[in-house]
Image (cartoon, rainbow, N blue to C red; front, side, top):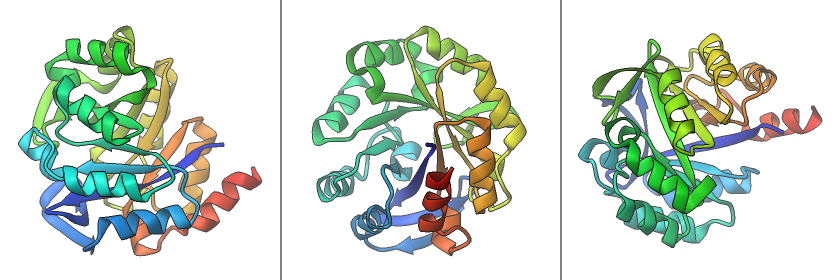
Amino acid sequence: MMEIIPAIDLRNGKCVRLYQGDYDRETVFGQDPVAMAKHWQDLGATRLHVVDLDGAKSGRPINDIVINDIVQALDIPIELGGGIRDINNIEQMINIGVGRVILGTIAVENPDLVREACAKYGEGIVVGIDADDGYVKTRGWKEQSTITAIDLAKQMEGLGAKRFIYTDISRDGTLAGPNFEATALFQSSINGAVIASGGVSSLSDIVKLAQIGVEGAITGQAIYTGKLDLIEALRELDRD
């Protein structure tokens, strides 16, 4: 069964959502990220997707105290991204109990680190690929690369990566629906497991993503605004 993964984006210690990754278009959805994490767990989530937005922008983990508090408060695993760009950061997060560490920018800038991390931590490493019109963006979606999402994924598979989070930046935080065509193409072009992210707005979006065959779907804005009922979505997938 496809996993529905609620997102918790951290900025200045708060739970926020950005529109298309724009730091100037922020909505605060909670002053207590730990309480929010427990809320999604209580509703039936089996995993949480946590992003340190301050870390993504600065290039080093910033909200590590809050992240540690979330890990310690939950019975379910989290996957974590944002500013994790050296082996010491990875080890630190694994040691506090993070289930999966997401490597994004560093996959473009230092692929050898991905090779080292995959060799050491196996499926504890996920490569996050954030695409805008098919091309990868890095450093908190501020810098445009010249490599396509699919080419980067294939390169990372060669270095040992087995799981990818594919985010369509143009859809993220918009409630406009995922880019199903691009997601399906990405899924069919690689061998690894794919978690889709960006634009999920309804139960029908969840069903379509499940039909594509992705392993998981990350949802943020939809469940925070009530457009998607997490309990209903989990029941629908369980029924299938």
